[in-house]
Structures are given as structure tokens and as C-alpha cells.
Length: 143
View 1 (spheres, rainbow, N blue to C red):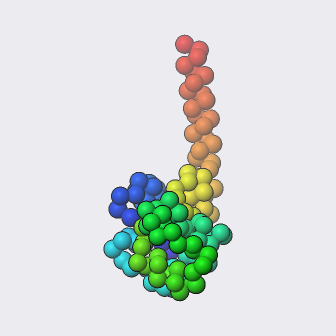
View 2: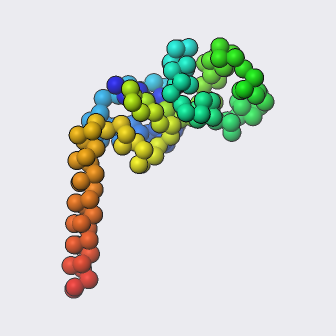
View 3: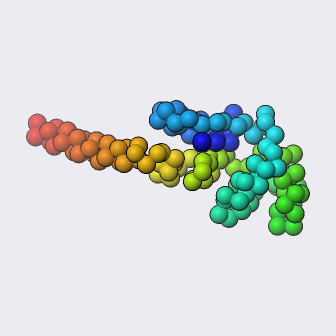
């Protein structure tokens, strides 16, 4: 199952949501502001990120700039509590399933959330579409 951690005003979150809907992929969306993330969820997100807090915490967020906290000085439980109190520090969207983890919207990397059978058909469609476009351009040039 795909889980999408999002916020209402996030343009990238809307893109991901629409991308998932367009492909009829089932997902659970969790608004980080209206549903408090559990300790287990936050730890799971941290474990899945390759670079820990660097991947999921926005150091440019207002809370991070005002608090002047060094995340490296926090224990895991302090970090979890800090995220629960200030969910706005999380980068968004965060998309994950059993095999893939992605922060933000990336046209190429989001394909990892497609089932394998859709991935191959999606790529062949793109290639075919590219050839069709080339043929159309060639016809236009002959006129």
C-alpha cells in the first residue's frame, strides 16, 4: 500500500495525489497537520530515508530557523516529539510503500511506485508516443 504524507497547501502534494489517481493506484493520504504522526510512523520514515533527518527535515522552515536546534544533538525520542509538535518541519510530500521511498515530486523517480507490469507498459507507451510525434513533425515538414 502506498502512503502519502501531505499538507493542504502543498503544490507537490497535489501533483503526487493526481499522479496516483491518474494511474488508479490505491493510497492512503495522511495530512501531517490534522493527524498526529505516531512515534512508530516517524521512526519508520527516518529508517527509510538514506540520509536520516537531512532527507525529511526542512532546515529552511520557519520553526527550524527560529528554534536553532541542532538535530544531531537530539535523541531519537526528542526528535520524534519535536516532529510531532512541529510537523511543518517535514519536507513534503513523503511517499512510501514496501519498496520505495520518495520525498518531493520527481517525474522520473515517482515511476518506482508503479507496479512492474505498469512500468514496462508506461515506458513503451512513451517511446511509441515519441515515434508518433516524430512522424507528425516529419509530415508537417513535407507540407
